[in-house]
Amino acid sequence: MSLIAAVQMDPIERINIAGDSTFALMLEARARGHRLLYYTPAQLSLRNGRVVAEARPVEVRDVAGDHFTLGATALTDLAEVDVVLLRQDPPFDLSYLTTTHLLERIHPQTLVVNNPASVRNAPEKIFVLDFPELMPPTLISRDKGLIEAFRAEHGDIVMKPLYGHGGGGVFKVAPKDPNFGSLFDLFSVTFREPWVIQRFLPRITEGDKRIILVDGVAAGVVNRVPAENDIRSNMVRGGAAQPTDLNAREKEICETIGPELRKRGLLFVGIDVIDGNLTEINVTSPTGVRAIKRIGGPDIAVTIWDAIEAKRRA
Image 1 (cartoon, one colour):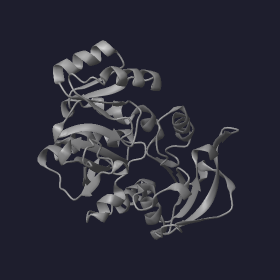
Image 2 (cartoon, helix red, strand yellow):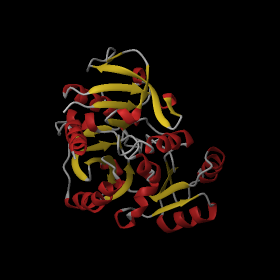
Image 3 (tube, rainbow, N blue to C red):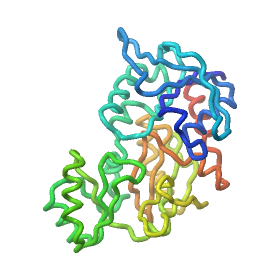
């Protein structure tokens, strides 16, 4: 099977190929003989009812500093390609939402991974709230009184932006923390949205597991251990990748959420689990594919393309 796959992503010249999951997907597409087209969100348009992109053919190779070659730009009707990989990184803002509205017009005739309507309706830190039995105690609010009551009930807490990403803006707050007032003021003027407040999980020092699910089934896992004196395990924040396996609780989490992921057309999902607690369901541009392979785990890019090809044959 030879497919035409368009990749909507951040500027390809800026990515770090050593850890970029989108690049891993592109390498696997190339290995299978699929034709790759590349464009950024700014090049996506709606023209006379047709969803089009100023796209360029792209060749990729796993060579740092020389990882791509682009062909000539051509206005491409995305209804005429087989697959669109929706892979730009957050922030999950109005610009991001607009791309989902546009791509929804071509899906599923053109398979968009992930389903753009489900991406729009399942922000990582909100969708997870559908499974409260799997989560630590959580509050979504910007009300100071409610946050202080939550602190009084649970002690150490974590505060983070509702639409943040990559570990940015994540703070641990103690029950009698003198910085809380200033932090609250900072969040109030920086973010218009509510914030996520969760009970702090002290075993974060042992790691935050990133589990990749493909079409609702667990496909691989990496344990991300925070750097010393940091609570953030994201590898872009200095977290270290370690091999690990799924325990019984983590398998239960995957089996619980898997059917809903399949129902929503969320084919490539990364979840975060700390000490048996589900904290996020990442659907916009999940990462971890290259890290899992690098530590001896499976090549999940293969599994993802197997699933895409199966859906195209169906």
